[in-house]
Image (cartoon, rainbow over all chains, first blue to last red):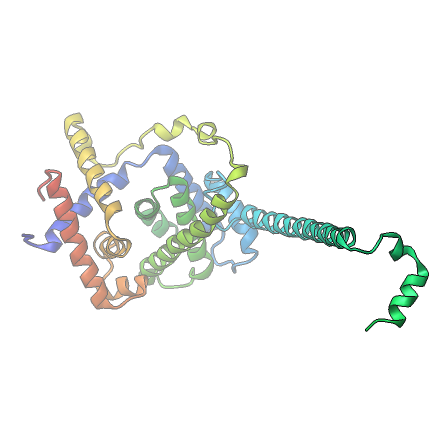
Length: 136
Length: 183
């Protein structure tokens, strides 16, 4: 059973403080760089958030691409993803149209070949005229 | 502002680390939070800064997870274009160096080792806590915000903060006791 939450929490945070005091030198350097960047922005209105974040992430040295949220790079990547998707959709639509046309031609061929009528009849103008005139 | 940021940056980084378990992401989060605070709240009285900074930090962590979720979806979809192993290229020997500790209690190597092990256990236990419990515990006890400030930073009621804190302490104590660490 826990005696006193506050007492335990105090002990735990004491250890957490010790852990925070032992950060790697590289991490501390990056943090100080980030702080310097923030202080340089003191009082400045938030402007061009995209550029700011991209530059800031380069400062932090964390720029491994995947670990840089909100950066201009990511927005660029989104743009490219959009372009690729649109291109893929266009290509797919074109392929589908070609496939449909081929199917229509195939169906027509099958109908003509399976018909009792000789194929020359379709080329005879007189036959076309007769068809239009005497259709039931 | 400079003094305040210098004071909170390590703890903020650790908080982001507990949440994301990714050092680069944690650095980005802390930096974003610092930038937002400096740009938008520089004129606020110093006593309001801790609560404002914590609120920004928590929101930035949540934003990170939202973006990560979307990014993961696309990564799965576009996995055919997988990237190479970039981790090895980014290895920095400087990263392996430990910063000089300010604590005079770290003189004894055996004690230093023991303390490092305990810290490791506690940090690991913290990462296993549910996110809201961890947030409440860190804000209330580590950042020493009062209940109202912690509630404002977390965007929930004071009652929720108390409940999360209590559960967090119980869970941490149980996890550490299971590992043989008596508090």
